[in-house]
Length: 324
Image (cartoon, rainbow, N blue to C red; front, side, top):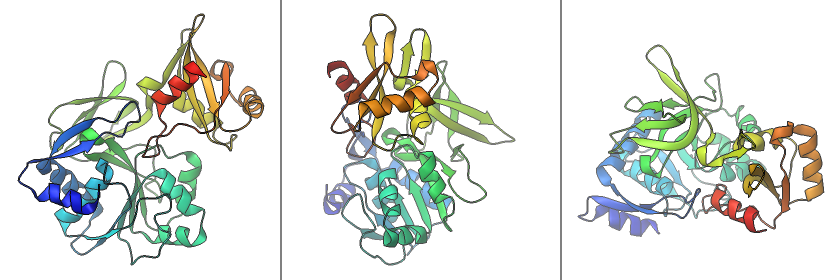
């Protein structure tokens, strides 16, 4: 979708806009969302970041998904000056005027850090929010010294982008997300995050994200442990795929993914997909991981399956593990 096509849809008589889910856990699904709720979400983010009319905002993500659409809506709501670049892995390859606000996925941030000129431009962004995927420890460490505000966001298509942020740099840096004031969070019986955000989502949303919620003096915070879909039940032990990936991250330099396969004896077993040498990955796993976290199957793949937005395509990985 082009920005002209989105603006045409935004300015027509309809009260809704068509968006698609990201497809990280299955096929992308279409859904209609109300423009008034998109404006409410945009207003909340603009207020939180203290954005004002005339500030510059960088649109560098696809308008096929909610993250790109919401950048345009935030510009409309607050009168921001929108700078648009073709969605790519290097959104800062071309020098732009001073950028007050930008939203990127982790892959775009990672790529920008690898090129000196792009890294410098990234550091000059006044408010940088990062969403659409997990931010690993090494990426977070690189951002800690940034002079301006860098945030990780939590949200999904159904919540019209994010409903909570956590600071990645400065004295406020934390692994705990702080929900916006109008958002209430709790846990389901299965330990999954439950979101009540009536401004942007008409119904209570029970997510598949395993979480912890912490209540303070009039405040609430939460952190994400992994997805319920990615729990591997092996021999009666529940293993969170993302937790194993985090354990391996300092030691495996080639792309990899933890998934699962059905097993007659154990029910499910841990499977490691890697773009590198299977033997090397196995040596690392046996040296680093606890016995019950170690994969029972190692598979070489030409490419780790990813969605269009750069997230692990978990369902596709399960299918790969079952058939390869």
